[in-house]
Length: 479
Image 1: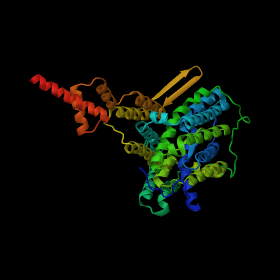
Image 2 (image 1 turned 60 degrees about the vertical axis):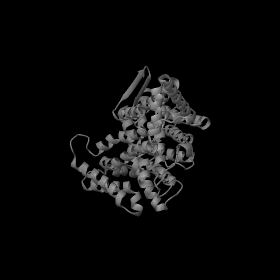
Image 3 (image 1 turned 45 degrees about the vertical axis):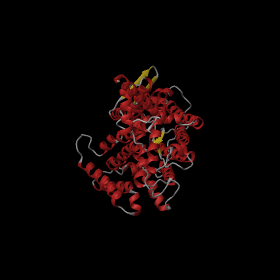
Image 4 (image 1 turned 120 degrees about the horizontal axis):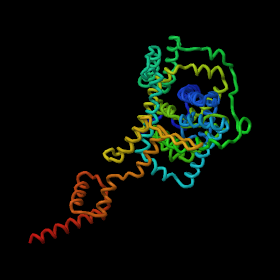
């Protein structure tokens, strides 16, 4: 369902507008990207990752991706939530060397898959991941983030904080009103305006502590952990992280399908899944090399592209450059870190919902037939497993693997789609193997009245002849 882009992938707005649009992408990814190091460190009980390094590797990764895709895909790469628990577990097993070796290995897995697709093709992936699987997958990405937004705005069931609710409401309403009522340039920066207005209200309500900004230095070098300088290769925890790469492949395809649906381009074909996976893989490898988290395509930034209709790859690249610069600016990083979660939660209500709606668009665009029981089973199973908190933990000796959320839903969806027979397939098989007069009459009526089954002309002719033969024999018996 193509939208008319205000700026297409190969276009660049005037430099002033480009800077503002790039900052909007930066703010969209900031909350999630800095949250990954925080959660990994909390899970490990020690400092494994740092926010400045996560920002720098995010920016570098985005630029690598743009180079690999030849500037034909407006994707921003940020820290991946799927690797939070595996990185923490790998650190506890093999220290920083075990964790970063695992992250680099994940990048290499992506690169290997990209090479296979380059030479073998992606038809096997089309069979594994049809629209009935990808659509729910995208919906789970968006709806799975919904609890995070609800928690940020203070509506998760705890004691209601009026200030938090006011800030979140202002951020949400300003963003929504700007999106629907604004004209000109303001219409394409709704999230930035919403965040600024929400932040101002938070300052007025006394919710901002500027102490970290005062204490931070203007310039600071991030705490990079560089391979062979700060750590060596360590394969002891490899099996803890690497299997997740095969699962996040589904997320990669889902995000690119969603973005392609928004901008009216098939990104899986052009620039091609081999190039997008190569960019994602090399970005993740470099992140591990420098001591950062694994990268992934960001649904938040995909939503920004769709809702602002600005698909300029140059704007995405500028956002990546800003992320690198901010990683070295202590005060600016500290200032952005003071943005209350209520502000981010307010705009995230729109961002996350937009992702889910695009999953629905995939199903509609591809005319997925939910009168077909198989499609109902595949989609409903994925949604319940992906959103219901289902998880499978496999532990044997040093091997530990947990598959949950979208990862588990994707695997189950793929397996169900591959092995469940479609009703139409069973009907055709039954008629071909052992046709009966009743079956053929019913089939003829279905073809004539509802066109529910497609058969070749020669099979239709065979049915006609069989019916005529049966009628002739019946008349003879009556005589």
